[in-house]
Length: 331
Image (cartoon, rainbow, N blue to C red; front, side, top):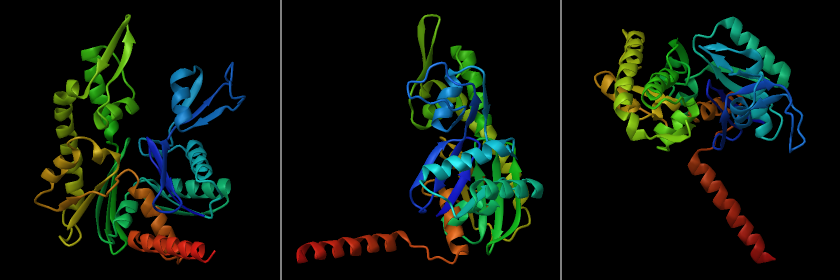
């Protein structure tokens, strides 16, 4: 089984067919056993959704994310990779995954060796944003990948790495600034997961404080949010423009904006405005899962296996259905 794996600071995405992607929080919690367990479980390591719940409800626990300020936390990274393979229901033969563009050669070797040893499989390591370029069928171009803790930039020419950067500026900066505003205005703190629901799903979030129900809605924070996003995009765009200085216009013809951060309100529009005189800013159909799908696609290509397009898959499925119908009529 070939797996495309994108382990982000906030979310992990994994696929074994290039279409269906499992997504779960990039959280590993080490803690004491529960006093009571209605499921009869006695484990001390919690991952994903369960880890998120445990981190909010249990004391004396250690909460780890696989990446911190662009650096890889090896043990939690391996735990999450193992969990992703289990969720996909089998043993991996090849795992293609990405790391921050500016991760050191030593870090890359350590992660690669640890994954091989822990999962007994071949490992392909790539610069994080490359997955989205491959997913979109672009061998040459620029990709800006806005993650939770970092923003990665990569420049490719005919599938060769030219240059790149890892900025310690992710959407956690936007969330942090907005969380401070909410704390000052409403007297409550909310988690990054709740912040995403507030901004992306327009769901209200709140707490019980002083015997009262305190609720925050999207419209309550948008004025402050708009100011924060404009300043944030300006900082990131300035760094990207410095990286692109002097490049051929043919390389920068299309600039791909990907990652969960590109879905936040205003972010895509602000990037289009910032780069309107440089490139056409485009975005994958699903920026959150695009890297994982691209990693899978590249692994298949390197293994010499044919990649079916959506049209080919649909045609193949129709032929199978037609064949099944013919068999049924013969019976």
